[in-house]
Length: 185
Image 1 (cartoon, rainbow, N blue to C red):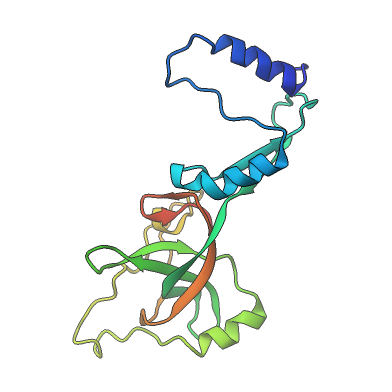
Image 2: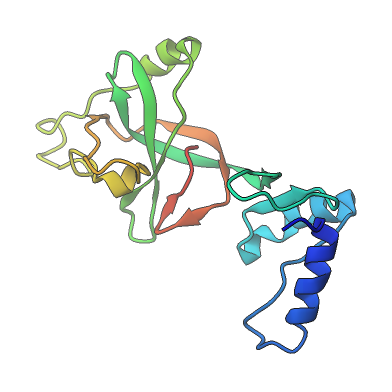
């Protein structure tokens, strides 16, 4: 643990030299341009970003001695609900249509700034179960805790359902699993 990263990594490479193919050493570079290229081209292969560590850094248990740069992209989503109220939305619950035309819940935003809440509220309409020919909202009320990315709390998320007619362009990182973004959008 006291050895610098460069020495620890070289030792690990030696240990894995004859290992089975499924035991691979993660890619490594000291070239910032190469790392930037990974962020733009390797996302299709499933990488979520790159980790920056100091070559002379020691391993310190319980302390984060590195930074993660997440790969990000812009996507369009449909707003299907809000936390808070429709008149004063705190966060947005968003979704995308699947191949069958069903609106799937895909994530939740970070808290909205007060400056963004009012203009957004003017675009949203509360979901009216009676007006839509008796149609049900595409998501359950409340949302299961696992749907809203709240793994640290087990209670479902109560939210205000809105008519899924407003499309928003958002920034997301590429950590996408079980049809949802793992981190807030």
